[in-house]
Image (cartoon, rainbow, N blue to C red; front, side, top):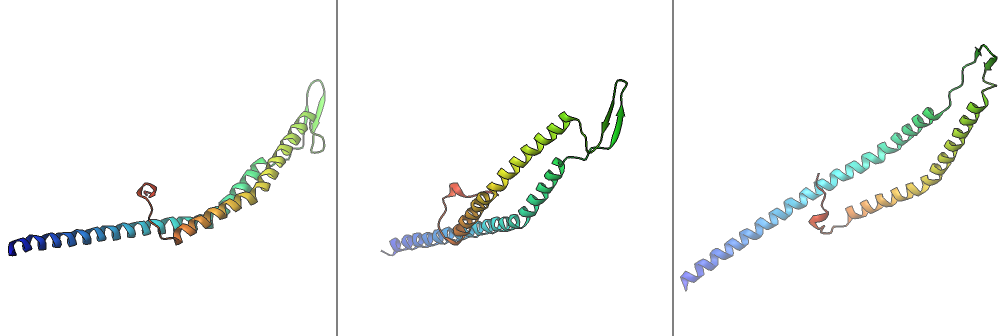
Length: 148
């Protein structure tokens, strides 16, 4: 009887040790996931702070690049006839091209400005979802864990 109690005690000790090892692994995994979540949260906060400035800067530079340059006030003479280029009188085909480009640019700008509220709403929804996921303590399947 005493000899059979010794192996039982050893197996119980091994089981307890295995359980504590498992618990330690789970705790380490939880800590790792929490640190990854904190990194992602810091990124989101950083993006929230910097993206609007970057978008505004990009929009300003794009608009500045698209802005038509004032034509120079130059008189050009040719052998057959004189052509005067001034601010008031551009060549008709050049003037039409600029007007068409401006019209297209305005249309695109209006469409983009009209879409901004929808994009902001989607952005807010995504941020809310991220915040909700952060608040909920659920087990996430390993397939969906992000590797950094």
